[in-house]
Length: 277
Image (tube, rainbow, N blue to C red; front, side):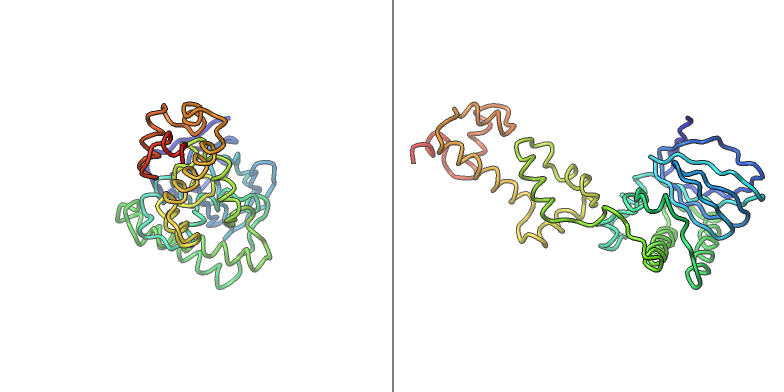
């Protein structure tokens, strides 16, 4: 199956087909697809979704899809890579930093249902698409804050429509117990508790994760990790069952000296001295 690539962070494409010009395919980027006119069947993963003028679809890199056109269809594509939203986190509200548009677009609910956009959302969406098309003719849309906010507003319309249809986005809520459980399970592997790794695991923007963690747990993420790791090391030392070298290996330190320097920085004494207390 063909996999399409895109190197621009954001690209706008509008075209009309009587027969869809692509076979079933996947891609490495995300797509928001608006049907300006026409009808047919959208084959999305294993789902057959009838489409008509005014319908909207969101496609993520994992999706396989193509269109079976019944009546000549004019498509409007908004295509973007991961780096598009990552580069504009300073412009993004808290809600979209916690639940990123990319994670939202992966939600299974949006692959199984055609959203029923009613007025005023239907008209607002049409106007938003026209606004983006107008900007695309005159400026570099990838750097335009106005286009960025127009795209964010589309996600807002999708969420409002889903609420009206009693549809629930699955798996995007943050469970604080799951966060702490993940940390405790992976504290022995330093790479797995790096901010970028845990933020990605829970679909939270990396630049926002630290602020979210501190606000939620009243302690910085780094300090929490240091405190937990140090406490566990203390217990290992007091239990007197493992040599320092083995403890260093267990917690992912390069060697005994590395552990000793880390512990001394935290406790103002070497592990060997702490063992005597």
